[in-house]
Image (cartoon, rainbow, N blue to C red; front, side, top):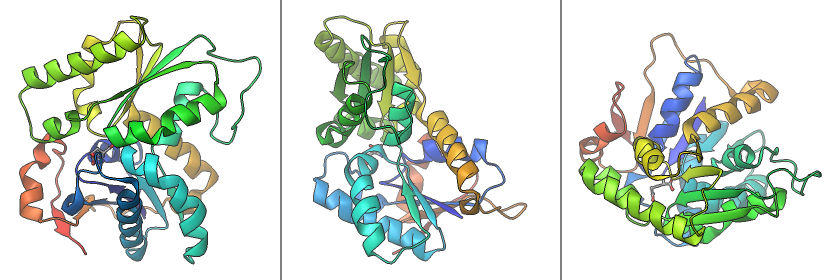
Length: 282
Ligand code: DGL
């Protein structure tokens, strides 16, 4: 069984992508609604909350957990993989994040390659990243892209209020105006230059991908996080097939929450139209 962890609802966009790609595999999703959102929290809190979520999923029998949250992946993934997992007695377990697949897709360079490749690809390119405030301030997208493609220009845009506005189901006209504003700020910083590629580095943004397409220059290619993460997991499971346990014939996806299931259900429809209700954990 593979676990997915997110701060709340947003990771359901990634979950849907994985269910489409792996209809036979067993997944369980945990949303930390009691502590959402993570996007404006400090790093120590995010690491602690993410570790607690991963522990819950391990305790339920998941050997592999995907952090289906950009903020948790940006801030906590490396620390948990490198420091906590080896010290915690979790042999045979692993954690993957959603930042690494996006960096691989944006640079066309495998994660294992951490130095520039020659001849340099994409030297003159500009890569845009739209994300929460904490993901942008972590600097992880820039750092990891630059390791592989040091001469690309990276323009990161913190979209402080956008995830919350999507979650509240705000009117499309409001979301449209917000996206126009964030894209406009980013293009001012690139001095009007169209980015070759754009990463929507927040789980909520695929829900309004069309608004980003509308406001970004037509030549900018958007990297779709649910698809890119599904590609990456497919590749990982080819190399580590024992993590991919099969589900029962008519088993519905399991949804867990640290919050109040009734409250959580109220804003669920923005993210999830499939069957299934959240059960409380913790
Ligand atoms: N899931 C978060 C992310 O992808 C967005 C919501 C939050 O701030 O917790 O960054």
